[in-house]
Image (cartoon, rainbow, N blue to C red; front, side, top):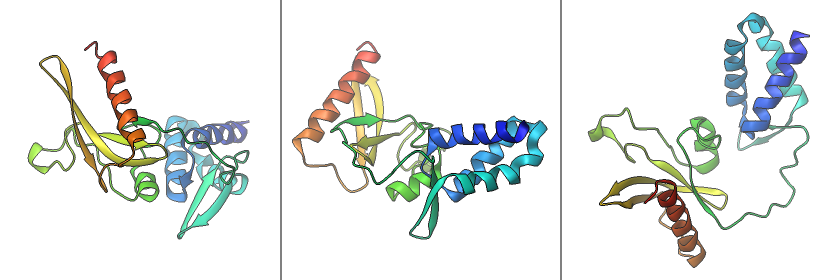
Amino acid sequence: DPQAAMDAMADALVQKYAPLPSGSLSTLISMLCSAAYQWVDLRKATLARARARLNHARVDGTDWFWPADEDPTRGWRIPARVRLLAPFDPLVWDRRRFELLWGWAYRFEAYTPAAKRVRGHYALPLLWRDQVIGWANLKVAEGRLQPQLGYVNGPPREAAYRHALEAELAAFSAFLGL
């Protein structure tokens, strides 16, 4: 059944990328139809069925969607960790959603002329606990990792943040064999 297949693929995308603002849900389903072009005529029905099936709420004028089996109000234990994210990480790739969630614009600037870059050639979004608070540009000089960090509102003052950042940078160094 093509419609059941499209619904299942839409659910898989939502499972991966939720929460999704309405516009991003529509974009993902359009991209899905590009991948399964033989079912492109099912795009509108797939989107309508997803909107009807998924949990959703309006927050600050934006409709957000997430899998029917998730409860965003349940308590979460958020580890005191830093993660440097790739520009196409599931938390980052949807720039519209990124700005709505984190309150600032992230752009991948590797193809932007150097003079026009805001954050750097390959700025990695910096996740602290459950917030993307800035970015890092990493380079290796004289056999050592040289991070350049930028923050939206300054670095956290907690010792736990400094320790977590050191651990993440040490993991990068080890990965690079430094």
